[in-house]
Structure formats: C-alpha cells, structure tokens
Length: 160
Image (tube, rainbow, N blue to C red):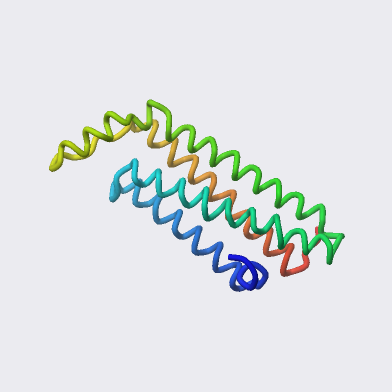
C-alpha cells in the first residue's frame, strides 16, 4: 500500500473502494446468515484492524506528513482526517471488546459447534448480533465520509 498506490489518486481510491466493498459484502453475508456469525465477525475485525487501520497508519506516517510539509495550509484539514483515524481505531477496539464478551463469543458454544457436525451452529442472541452489525455499519459510514473528505483535501485541493 505504500509508495505509488498511496500517493496516486486513482490507486488510493481503488484501495478505499475495495476495502469498503469487502466490508459491505461481509456485513451482508452476516445479515443473510450466509456465513457463521463468529467467522464473519472475525473477518470484519481482520479487515478493520489490518486493512483499514494499517492503511490509516501508512497515511499518517508518510502521505499526511508529506502533504503537511508541501502544503502547510492543509494542516488543519489533515488533523481532522487524523481524528477520523483515531475514531476508527477506538470504535474498532470497542467492536473487538464486544466480540470477545461472554454474551457474544462463548468459547464453549464455538467448541460445541465443531463437535456437533450436521447441526446448525449456535448463534448469539439477536440483540447482540444486531449490535455488532450496527457498529460495523457505523464504522463503514465513517470510513466512507473520511474517504470522500480525504480525496477532496489531497487531490482536489479543497482547503475549506
């Protein structure tokens, strides 16, 4: 994700679009019960922690630093984008904590699912499932808003 793909508008936009699509598809699969709830939650956390937050860290450590040096007038706007990264990180940590809570992830239930092949997997209570999905939808909305704002600031020169 470094170098060319991070600094070129089209490549950078493609990274954002691919990640957003992957999140949308996984949320959709969870809602339709096309994948195991626990597997889907693990997939989403993997995307948020490694792809989204990893990408954000690369932006902070290189692209944003370079842009601040070359265009000091954009610094305040980049600070807002950095704040978005912090919010994404905080909400992802909360999603991980919720996913590890006894109400959501009961290791005994997961182990029993493996032992009871041929039977439908045990699912968490619907309200817990809804909460996890809601958090991920909110994170996705924040990510999309952030991506649009970032594009305006970095490539369209919108400094307002």
